[in-house]
Amino acid sequence: MKRLILLAATTCLFAITQAQTYVQLNPTATQSGMTNISGPSLANYFQSSQPSSSGGIGHITMNEGSVARWVIGTFGTTQPSSVGSDFSIFGYDNNGAYIGSYFYMQRATGFTSVGYGPGTTPVSLFHLRMPANGASALNSTLTFGYPGDAGNTNVANGAVTGGYNIDFKTWRDIAPDQVGARIRAERLNGWNPGSALVQRMDLVFSTSDGAAAGDLAERMRIQANGYVGIGTAHPQSLLAVAGIVTAQQVTVTQTGWSDFVFAPGYQLPSLDSVAAFTVHNRHLPGIPSATDLAKDGLDLGAMQKAQMQKIEELTLYQVAANKKIDTLTAENADLRQELAELKAAVHDLQATGKN
Image (tube, rainbow, N blue to C red; front, side, top):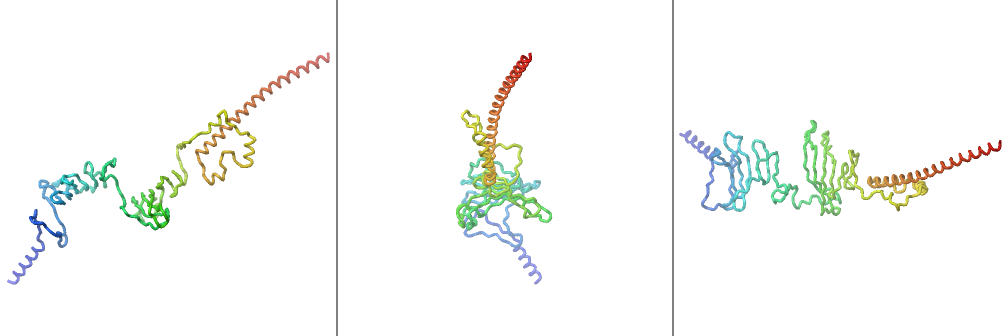
């Protein structure tokens, strides 16, 4: 008899611990407080299910009053022959009318789409649905950071206050967890030392050869002022390259040119004045000296213009020289003719005297 009572008590206790709790649908009285769902082991969950697609798909709805606002549920077929339903979060307007799926995850592929837009099926591992023209207030941009995050404001003027990284992983056998490339939006103090109340932002591109984790290095920077540096983090112009540039063609736009040399009123410097200038300055007039080039660099457009002016001046010197040569040649021919005639006359006089 004692064994029967003990067995009955054990069975009753097992039934209590394994029993399912059902929440009353459409309760007549307003519920107060919070509803907690708990249980031992793996029983700590809330389940919504349907045995087949004919019964609909599983949803958990969040309403305000009687109006649906958000719904978490499955999407697509639930028939046993399919691979299973996808997961989605649906949005509804102020009147409870369905707007669309704001979050969609495919069960078979893991492809995920975020944002409202035409179509729901994601086409890549992460698919951001947003209008191309940015006209919509929803999902018109992808934002990093949050308002009010000042970062480290106690830095020197121009120093880094913080930033946001997009990293791309690479691999090597002895150091498998490496960043192979990085796009970084870097914030810098643009105000006073120790008081970064205004922060500008540079865009930095870094790559690594994968030999070591520390080989990730900056390769190009776009500064907040639009200056671009390749191989340098401190460009001093719209484009600064610290190294050799190889190109099939380089076009330099130039304001004005040296054709004024051929204008009728242009005063061509005398060769004597040019010679005197070079003796005193050790370079041509209008051409930068070696000291100037070492200090300021070479302005390709200005140098090409200055060189062309010298070429055109040399052309005028050559034209003038050719004119003198032609004149001298003509004069020389006349003198030769006169000399020949004098020789003939002398010969005739000598012949007459002998007779």
